[in-house]
Amino acid sequence: MLDSTKPYCGFNNIDELNAHVEGVFAECIEVPNDLLPEKYHDKIRGGRTLARLNELIAEEEETETAHQKAKAAKARNIEKLRKQFEEKAIYTTHKGGTDFVDMESGFDYGENEADEIQLAKNEYAFVRGMVNGGLIEWDDLETE
Image (tube, rainbow, N blue to C red; front, side, top):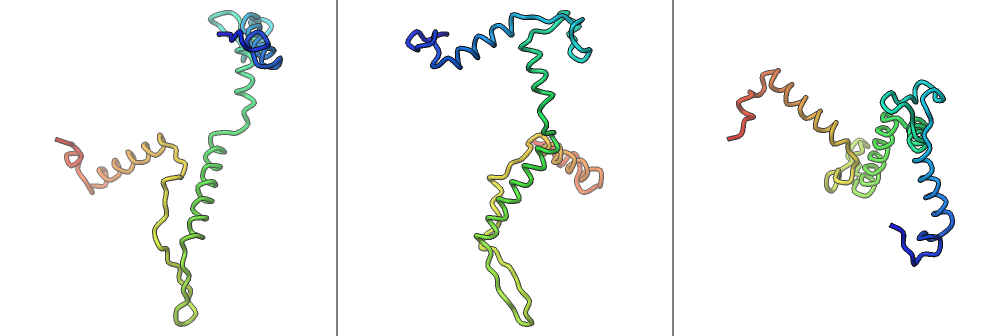
């Protein structure tokens, strides 16, 4: 575990050593439930270690919700597509001053971020809707 060739008891610097010792002590010190707020109680063990309390507090402090993360990913995807549009768009003006935009090729969605689980749920819902609407039959979906 520890590398004896490194100067600080197997760590590169004193900060790494301090962080390691702090983590070890945090695992050793247990705070009983009667000293903790109700939301931090551990009914099975009767208390929590300082390390686990630090993890719980860090989870609570994470301010970005799943919705905010999804919105941020959507904004990044839109920015990627906007850059592709600027690179590939061909503007032409026809009679009457009407402007048309043509793309040399379509958008490349390969680099977009996607929530794979939500994508699968959406695909399943789409297929169920097609079956319920009578557009396809369940038998058509079975593979041989």
